[in-house]
Amino acid sequence: MSKTILVTGGAGYIGSHTVLQLLLSGYKTVVVDNLDNSSDVAPKRVKELAGEFGRNLSFHQVDLRDRPAIQKIFAQTKFDAVIHFAVLNAVGESVSKPLLYHDNNIIGTILLLEVMAAHGCINLVFSSSAAVYGWPKKVPCTEEFPLSAVNPYGRTKLFIEEICRDLRNSDSQWKIILLRYFNPVGADPSGHIGEDPLGTPNNLMPFVQQVAVGRLQALTVFGKERRMVPGFVITSMLLI
Image 1 (cartoon, rainbow, N blue to C red):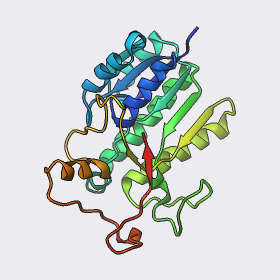
Image 2: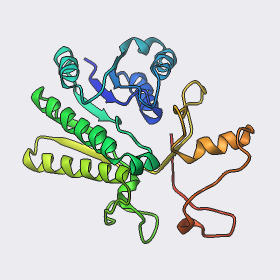
Image 3: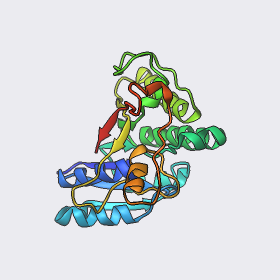
């Protein structure tokens, strides 16, 4: 019998690619996304790309902070695990709207964990970020590096990590993986899904693409700390 996975934020960039791979690997997959910075186009395209496995995908436009709606989804389906992508992730916006980020990211995650626990789902993969390292004194980073987020977005990721650690320490039956990654780049070879954010992109690669097609005249890369050679910037990427 195939296992069933809940993917929060599954209509987003990394989430949609994860959902596709889950389907192709034989998992039944349920996507929950409020579509604040994505659209329902991605789940539809993922379903098409998955071919016959697409029948194992269902989508709910729901905000994680809507407890009754989340409880209803868990009551309808027994989940073997949750992959949690559903957070706001724009660094600049987090500086101007810190309360929004703490409310959406942290409160939404706490509610999710509470509902998971109530329904006996204790397997979680959390999409964290290398932003929890702040500005490390040297690179590349290792997991043992000191954690020191420097903006509200990074701090929400770090706080969620700490919440997950506290939960695991209180109940050893929980199995939790915290994945920290850097700038995601790339797309499915079909070209039908990729990074297509609503509004201003949060990652570097969309700006590179816009310069390539003539939408922008030049590319600006912020962060003088990473300029190792004049005219070049060294950064870390996660290949999708």
